[in-house]
Image 1 (cartoon, rainbow, N blue to C red):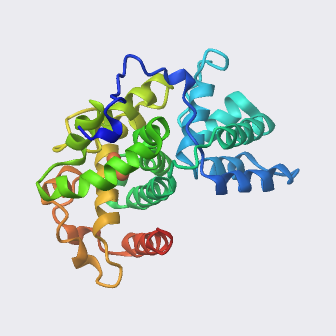
Image 2: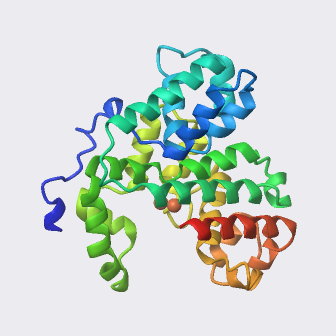
Length: 295
Ligand SMILES: [Fe+2]
Ligand SMILES: [Fe+2]
């Protein structure tokens, strides 16, 4: 075990999810302040800003599914949370309070930027993929696909928040050599914390009452093959979106996706990577270019 983290083994039994504050992305806080100054802000505009950020989105699900707000209407997205629980002013106040609270407790050594950007890009790609005929025929809802992608690595943000710079240091110092030896990210995390970001993220998501398909995407996004579970198609969408984010070279075109495992493509109803070509892929190319320009 790396000496940097040897006193910090993660015990899920001891982790109090109710006391965890996941830090939101600061630029989203700035967008919220702009909306606060707009008297005509709509539910959709506010939901679109909150849903840019995995931490804020998870926190709002958590609060709207708490005993304080729980009612019989299931909340599948942030528009539901605003309409059925919080109202526009309530949601805006709450989101801003969460940003301020996170800022007050911020540890400057915690660097979540790459994870926020990765989460947003994965969500955008999953949403674009949901327009492909095979996903539409499976009844995939674009907004749900987006939220599964946005939240799939919430455990990564959680580990970052709990272990701060130690997680980064251990990752940077140890993981590259472990990869060369064939070690997967999950094995590395288990060697440090006794758990993976997928497992601990799932525990958090369940505890906070996130929608079931999002919980599944968090839990199984590093499991291969994807198990036969309800909403498996959303897990597949997220895994495919991550693969595209890793492999796509927009200049090289569709053939840059040749290394995506055919087993994964088959699991989401595609026969080979060329099935991904077309208008949807051009849109995804723009998302990948934007992502690479800021990362
Ligand atoms: Fe990821
Ligand atoms: Fe992940």
